Image 1 (cartoon, rainbow, N blue to C red):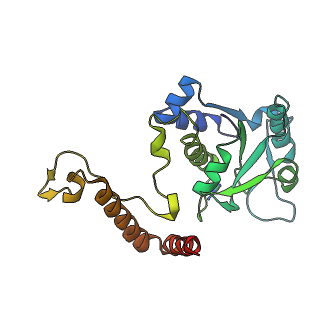
Image 2 (cartoon, helix red, strand yellow; image 1 turned 90 degrees about the vertical axis):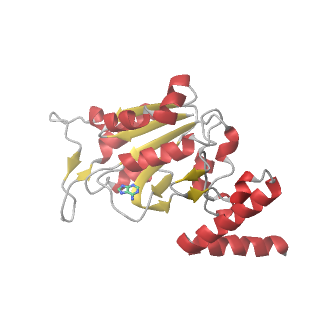
Image 3 (cartoon, rainbow, N blue to C red; image 1 turned 120 degrees about the horizontal axis):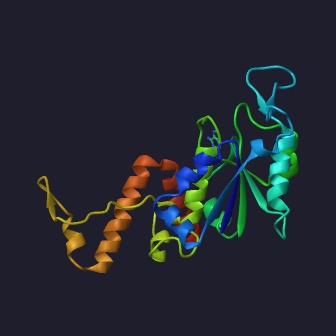
Amino acid sequence: MNFHVLTLFPQMIIDGLNTSITGRAIEKGTLSVSAIDIRDFSTNKHLKVDDYPYGGGAGMVMQAAPVCAAYNYVAEKMKHKPRVIYMTPQGYPFKQSMAREFSKEDDLVILCGHYEGIDERALELIVTDYVSIGDYVLTGGELAAMVVIDAVSRLVPGVLNNEDSAEFESFHNNLLEYPQYTRPEMFEGMNVPEILLSGHHGKVDAWRLEKSIERTKQYRPDLYNLYFDNLKTKEI
Ligand code: ADE
């Protein structure tokens, strides 16, 4: 899978993704991440890419021309018009289901804004998906893009060592993950729950499900309700 990030801070993307699991997948060639510097497409002699907002107000707005030129540079090498994700607090909330959908694409273009955003006309021309990673405002879209790339990458076959581990995890069935333990059996006077040492898979699964439900109820009542709604629909 190939990610193409349009940004004013390409080094941030490269530095952020070249380590750990994404770094290993890039080295293996399972993933590629290219960061395209929007400033390279400025036609201004000072390489300016932003200007004052029409109608007044604080801050600057990224101009349409360099953003569209950077996009065209990337898109013209592709056979089909790619999906273009704009990272913005004004977008649809990013979810595991969205990560799953994005992971089916061969190419994803991710557009990062800065300052007060990007001229709406550029967005109208090129963006297919508006995505927010949460209800807070970051200084730019780069960290948000890395969150999306990380979550999508681990669903791409061959990125994780054990492909099963992408399947049984948080948000499968709308439940949060159960607690995990490893050796030693006793740490600071605390024992690993007996049942996990029993070797009885059925009981272990039942215990894990119970803990998942407990956690989801406490931390994410919204997901807890969805879980039970879905169970009821299945019964009907
Ligand atoms: N850019 C700034 N804040 C953001 C957010 N919460 N999600 C996605 N992109 C952003």
